[in-house]
Image 1: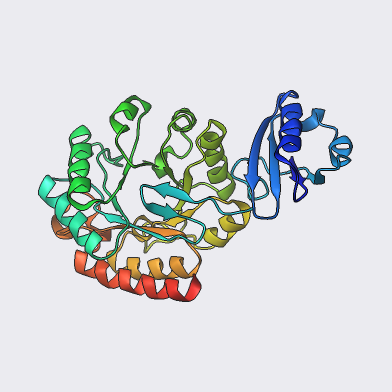
Image 2 (image 1 turned 45 degrees about the horizontal axis):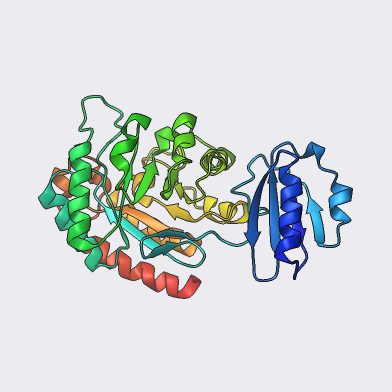
Length: 333
């Protein structure tokens, strides 16, 4: 349920109403715009007398929200959420380029790539220290050592970094991580999502390869309902009957999520296609579709990469793509 307050409602009157609603056992999320204030009511709203609330002189409208996701619903929060990572803003008209290797392999490799993508205008560095792999025999990351190497790359370049957390047991190791990524395979790891709701860090939540948009938003709801509102949604391709690409990039998800939710939307064309030459056209298409950012895999030696070299751009290829993305942003922003 949402309660829209009239413009000019005094803070005292607003707090009186919020206090009364909280006494009914509800959580209240306040969203303030230039000309409105929306109170989002979460919990058992059946005990709320809509007619009584609607009759108050400070209330403009009372509406029930039929969707099961509440906190991430645009009806609760009409204006775009802007997630801040240091000096970098994402969402609400702010576009972020996130780039780096699939896996951190060595200090030389991650620092070299970090310097290259920063020179091309990247805002954040990506790099996997803990890697979920389909085969138990594949390289699964340097783990804690990989996190330390990412910190070295950050110190060398000033770029905040994004890296994936796979297990709640490793959460203490991520204390100095800038953005925690929840991978596609963990999108419905609800215990993990609840714990991330208690963390004061931005979360990049990737859509599962066989999950609907509603399921993605419900996973975001787990994080937000536990207290962390710094959530970014990531479309990274879904499993279909296509046999020429790794996954199918669902670009229709971008405008649809924009309509349903106020959270920033990031697109990952690298995992979606699995083929380096397809990454640039899909990245440009995602930018034109209105994404708030791109996360792209870049490796200085893709042929010898320990993970996903086939979908990684070389630094010079990324540089050309970044320039084209800026041109597209000049048209659609």
